[in-house]
Image (cartoon, rainbow, N blue to C red):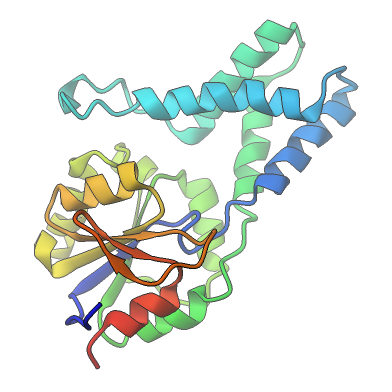
Length: 238
């Protein structure tokens, strides 16, 4: 792929884009819940019961056909608590769902940046301003960003915006507050639905990052596919 001019802004998703979202840490936490409460259930079973409900929350929170009919905004912590409440009712466990949701928030805030994150964000910042738009609560987004050796020009969470990607309105807030146009921005994320669809809806150039496998840089119809931030820096004309 040929090199291209740097944009005014490069905006990143956070988790699984510049910060890990460690699945093993999630399952270890659920194992701790079981051990501490002496519940008779396998870790994988408890995780699956809860995760299925959490996935349902993600699927219904944004109605792209009619954004005005979205359900009332719900933070991850509140949604996670609701998921625990349903699981505990099914299993007849006597437990406070709010406490378990809070521990998930704390656990999420312990995730570490990828090895290339700090170095290459600093390199990219020589060419463009760097921002964040993340589907995240501030209580776990802010701690992980503090672990990155880099100062972002702008950070917008779903909790602050009261909107979730791919709702185009969260991207529009970014554009308005930074006084830029969509074509002035690149957006880098790991999900085709949330990140590619959402960012392209306001004219941003989307990059889909997949860190699980190494791919050469590929330009597709809807986005540019990359595997790491090193590849992103190589695309920019010096």
